[in-house]
Length: 63
Image 1 (cartoon, helix red, strand yellow):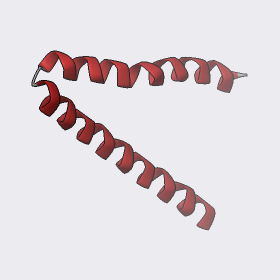
Image 2 (spheres, rainbow, N blue to C red):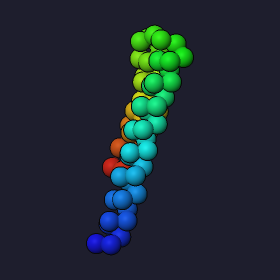
Image 3 (cartoon, rainbow, N blue to C red):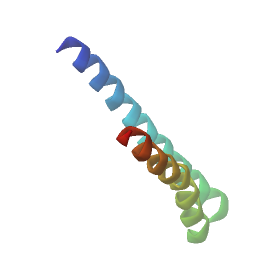
Image 4 (cartoon, rainbow, N blue to C red):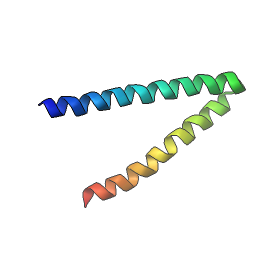
């Protein structure tokens, strides 16, 4: 149980850090450009690697 809590805590801290980074970068993009298109592109390119990794990770996990 202790090992699970350590791993879970690490994942929790990592997820919060990722969310804070995404939020801060969104604000920075808005302050820098003041355009919604820039924010949409930011979100698109932020999610793109996750989509590709998830596709190949799913295949890898199935084997």
